[in-house]
View 1 (tube, rainbow, N blue to C red):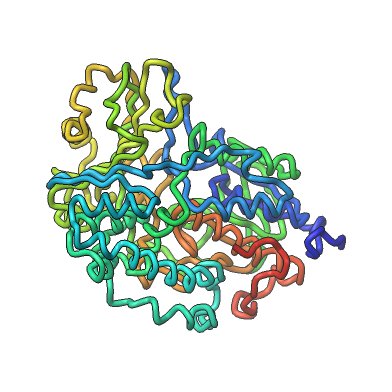
View 2: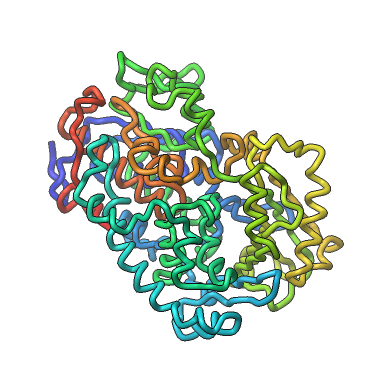
Length: 526
């Protein structure tokens, strides 16, 4: 085999199929192609990105479908660099300041900024004593991230990985008995200030009152490393990745659905797409785990994740979405990202967790045109409105509820100065939990995948190496949800697969495959 520029043997004779061109599938394709693997990327939709795509609606309005901002771009920059490219040559990322505007319905607001003096002043306006602890919170979470970053970068496909040196070093910082909110009480007495550093647990679809205290690092990451808007929308990132993948020789087939994974004995050896069978040395699945794994892989090939276990898994919440194209402007006070936190936030979250549709919900509004004029035609505005709601296990009749809930959300927008918009709506699309399930193939409409509780993380989350010749990547897989975390998961998946292809171990029994260490000089270290 040939030697690549970073010392790895290229794998030009090996073939891998990736099912799904979401962020994880695209990143994995880049990393495998860099190593010389022949990659066939199959995507059922006519466009790449999965939920990380930007659509143009009638009237020229543009909307991100799912993610609306970019955190910690260094991981993706490292992936591009390992492919001999610079991320900034492909994507323009605008760092936002303020990052978002938090509006507390019970009173007060915070313009979140990474300028420490300004942030302290913002906190001091509603809680002077809490402002004194802002820097201590950041200092402590800087240490926490230092210890957990190596944990989130390692594979957890064997039980002994739970006793890795990185894991042992991180354990003193885990505090399994603490939730995010409980951990924040060590710094902030005012519940509004705690929410300013805790609402980010919604990126995981979880409650800050239940989410493990580890995830205080989410708000720290935002403030330390920035919140970015990709010009053109988050779909521009997916398109840039796809363009680079094609130039690197990836065989990308859009509009091509996969019916099932093929197995030779216990080893995955290809896929069936309608009447076509495509063979490969390994298969990588990128999709909503609880949905796609049941559709593509028989239970006999997933003994640790049979249907009964998937049905019992704890799931994230769902979301009720409004994509609105408005004629005319919105108030100048509406920034790029605005979050309305309901008067009784604890009750709001408890209702979602208990399967009750909240009647005084919190909500998030993206006004991308505040930064990016290309997201709507001149004289018009594109608004993205997200409302956390229970997933479909709650049994809510969305056909009967949809219109009244839409009315309620439009009324709620008046709190943000958007009380006059209905007459100006020129385009509207609603996505409720049933459409997340039916149109976007999300299990039970749980938009943020499997919940990130301690018994569904690390070794206990679906493994990147799922079985002989079968790999996973995406938010339902280790290390979890969120774009930077999914990209990190792609690095883990690609690293395991490259190592096993290089050693000829792809067909080995899962129980016999030893744990792997990061490849030296591979460009995969964060």
